[in-house]
Length: 421
Image (cartoon, rainbow, N blue to C red):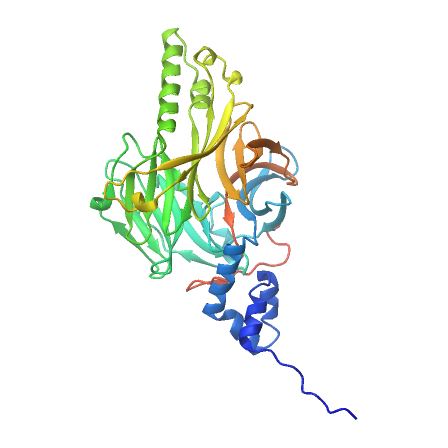
């Protein structure tokens, strides 16, 4: 009779190495296997390891968005959160809300995503009299928390990002000129702090009407205002408005203004032509750094009176050196990576996403248009994205599922079917 061999056992390190490759949904279920697995999966070191691998391998090629969907007819629509898989071009999940069923009666129906980083999503709800309420939310784990009220009511720019130096998640609210009062919320301290105006570096003229920062990368928030890049350092909490975008963008703005002068000279003015001619610019994450994408008119001067004759060009410049982000008068250096012609009617550039050599753009005109750009072939095409009962997309951001949990997070409780659309 052969001797009985003991059951093989795996070391905790090997189990961890296996589990870190498992999707978040399965990891949440595996917490029920044993107390040992529960402790391992909740360990902060494991949470960070899972996040690092998800980001490095880009296992989650997904975008989170707010979108309007039809209820019963075209005149009635509801706003919801959805997750889009980039590869399949399909909605893979319609999400519940970041608040509990009990809180649903006190929350305003108008909401927007402020940002998404490391699996944490910041959502703002707009109330009357310019007031806001914020939630920090992990849709994958179904946990969230409400954020204390911000002292500034009428924000002109909102942003959400991660400070890797202090391992902190922050919300930034900027109001308007002349002083650009700013408040910053720290998830670690659970308080808002007013940023002194002397911490600003100016470089743009006119009003500050940014709206929302485009993206959070490497501890900075990025947005665009005319021909300048607006940068907020999430660690030092300094706002820099003095970084110039590629000169071609300023030239395009000047050309659009010159075109309007031509129209004015013949006694006409067309706001649609003005809007169509000006470049639409966004900052995106690009190969662990940032890039500027621009959708702009490619019209000759004799075309200014017919906006439907404009051709559009999609350009992408990458930032060569990030030393300009920290101030000190260092000028930004940009390299044009590609320029792709795209014959189409004027459109508004909502956002962009770069991954695996493809640039995905969401543009809006009468309806949503998704444009896939192949950087190596310099080809662009309008593609169909499967979204049932879709009306139009509001905001979208890159989204990576994670186990990240913040202090004060609570499980969101909803009855089955309640609030489903």
